[in-house]
Amino acid sequence: GNQDAANGVFLRVAVFRPTSCPTVRNMATLKDISLRLRSVKNIQKITKSMKMVSAAKFGRAERELRPARVYGAGASALYEKVEITPSEADKTKPNNLIVVMSSDRGLCGGIHSNLVKAVKATLAEKGADNVKVEITPS
Image 1: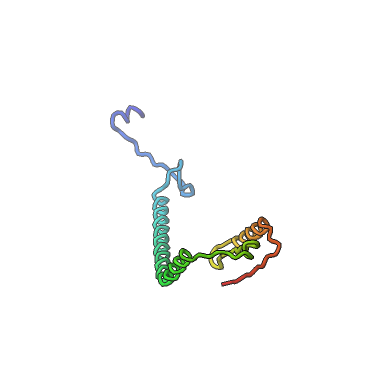
Image 2: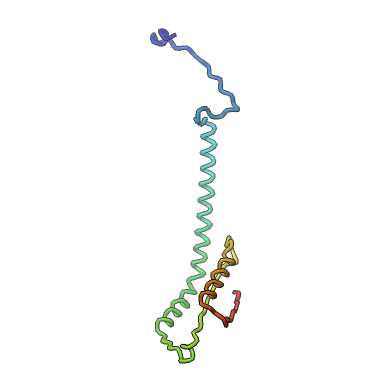
């Protein structure tokens, strides 16, 4: 036994491992590692293609937005230079404008009901008795 091992004589021992148990003591087999590696590579390919699609969509949206920037700059310049003074009638009864924007695309979830709740809370806070509501869908 031990004396043979000390003298350099080694015995061949076959280890039986059933195929139904792919891992022993949390050690992955070569097949498990190669499957995991293939899975990770596939996920990387999918992620890369999703990045390419989003970059293309972003580029297209940026190109479509470029002509509209002129209007935004003009509106900003107008608001910076305009001087508006309210009349005496407007000072006694101030008007409030609430602009609510929402989405009709994508995964917007409960955003619509939350927006309505926020507007109702704001109106209740201001004590708006005579309220004129206009809904303008775009």
